[in-house]
Image (cartoon, rainbow, N blue to C red; front, side):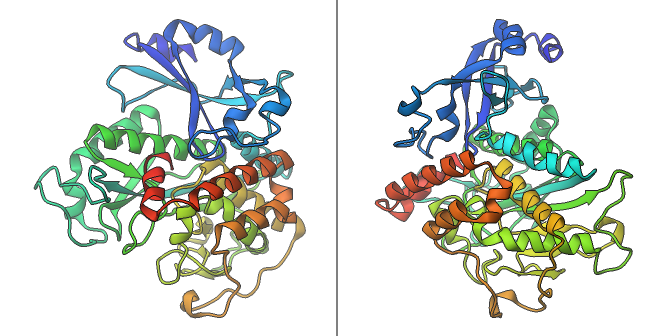
Length: 444
């Protein structure tokens, strides 16, 4: 781990960071000479730090705070090791960390450990998920009272209309994207294709697929930090909030996944267009857990502004072949690449919880060998189908009590997440829509 630091003698400080339940990086700044101690002893901060609300406040009446004396956990480096922090002016190193109890046991309220536990269920069956995420975000000028698309660095003008898959729009921000891709390479984040999307100043970048789902979630978490940091270097904001503008579609995080057996064969592939029984079982598991998983996929007040009909975000619990109005889409293409695209999550999610919820639900279905309902055809918005919860409070209640969720997440994480969201809900209810968006701009 120290090899990277030895090869980068210009680094002046170290940042250690772990994701809290909202995906916010929480950690410390340390001098470079602390690197050896980090490798052997880790760093300490309270268990409660991974369970703060969106403002960074303690959760009232949480057993992690006063009732337990706000005791410390031990946070150790992940296998990712040191990496640069390209958005800072001063050369620095970032070291991702995750939380353990004093005796070395993983703390199951840590979202990264939650995903690790789901992956252990796959490994026990000799299976390995292959996944990739597509992340949508907006570039925003937040210097005024309301959000606007930034002035183009090339023309000095603002875009006045959406321009899907526009090369011109990409070219207008070419300096930002060139620097972003260079930074992704420096941080070993596998950024792939970029496109302009349907909102003003909205873009999507795909991350390459791989057979390490924990690393895929790391990549998404780091990518969100990087995009926001690099945008500020270029004089504007970048935000993954679900719905920054009323008149344009919101931002999603779509996840594609398949599953390999011990021989490296895709168990979703049966050589035909419909896919294998295992694919159908995975679909059934995802659909069964979808309503109660909504709190993971739509964790904030603003999230529910995205989940409305005809907005390019799903509103019904359904699946289909090659149909982007459904919650789960089975893309066309070679059967050896047969996979599921899960389209519900907003860009504002915690990637670790999202990947865990999707893969955990799929494993529930694989274990139970359940069959899904028939795939839909046509426009899901115009069909009479079960609905994804469209109210934050409903999603919180369902997440707290659902039996499928209890198979995916540890009881402590469920409790902590529910307490966090109920505290946020009470405060957000008193704020205007724009005040909520101001809060979410940089935090999600």
